[in-house]
Amino acid sequence: MRKKLFIILLIAAALLTACGYVVVEDSDKVTIGSAFGLSAMAEEEKRVSMNTECELPDEQAESDSGASSPFELKSGMRGEEVKALQKLLKAYGFMHGKSDGIFGSQTEKGVINAQTYKEKIDQEEAEMERRERIEKLNMLRKKVINNLSALSIENDSSASVQEADFSMVRISSEKEEERTETNTQAGVCDEKLLLYLKHDFVRYVEPLKKGSKGMDVKRLQTRLYETNYLPGGIDGQFGNDTFLAVKYFQRLNGLKETGIADEKTQLLLFSEEMKKAEKPIYEYKVEISISKQKVYVYKWHYGSYSKLVKTMTCTTGAIDTPTPLGTFKMGGPCGRWYYFKKFDCWAQYASRIVGGILFHSVIYSEKDVSTLRQGTVSALGSRASHGCVRLSVENAQWIYTNIPAGTTCRVYN
View 1 (tube, rainbow, N blue to C red):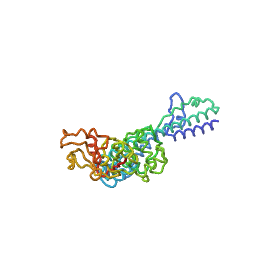
View 2 (view 1 turned 90 degrees about the horizontal axis):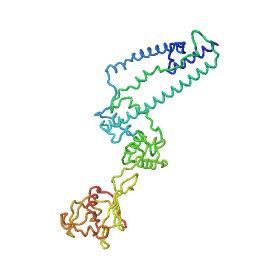
View 3 (view 1 turned 180 degrees about the vertical axis):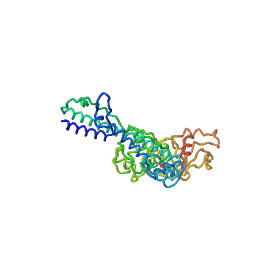
């Protein structure tokens, strides 16, 4: 019986030592640790570990002595290594901008984002490992106790195993604290971070959808913005704009349009195989309805000019001098004040639609705001011009300021 007990205790001691735990000895009790000298083993292990850590290879010793500098990419540096870093930061949604090989403020911000993300992931993994170790230890503890309870053990004056103290403590806590310490400088990419981005970065963690928030959402939004799917709003909050941007990405990349950034969506988005969205040359498209006497301005929105941003009341050409129908490329601004020689009158903020057909303000007798012809103001909303499209001064100014040459203008009944 004692031989069988001895074998069980020996196995338990070996398992507990392998788990990185020892049994705390109680002066009033004889424990498993004292029975097999685990405390002494732990001290010896710690001593050997400390001695081993002090014996550095020649190359490492030279590095620590300052003979060679550690690998770093930081502000002000240039070259192909910086360019490669920028591509990685952009691919994983940590920065947007050009991969120009110049380590500037955008790259520094991207490195800080990557460092913060890596630190978060490392902490989560460490906590998960800690919980798993505790769970394994508790299972082992229960197994040992159950095995001991199953045996009929005679009382011994020198050792009362039935009263043994099974309290467990970590012997590796000091080493773990050393491992979590880091000398990383914010915004400086060291070798560890670069290797993490090159080989160890996990592109997918969990599905992201409406209501999701946090660093992974911010990475998602940054990548969508960088590839022309999201017009803006990088805030770490998965709202309607992000939902539409994800659907737009899925549509152009042959995925099911759900608006949910699932595993397939994220793996493709954070890869070189993804298809970038077309970035429009012109932000707006202008349409003129003759029947409604309205001008509509649409903004590029998730793949088309579908977002109505301005509606203006206008005056188009009279029945006998109509505004021409069709789709035209506008000529852009052509005069803060514009003189119509044939009609001896003036207008503000003229922009060319096609040929002699312009957008412009209501009419003035002279190049003077005090000479405004009130009749042209009253005529807004009806057909009364010689073909041009009259607008209020405010609306004419907006067209003049925001609609460049080349912008599409469609005129229809």
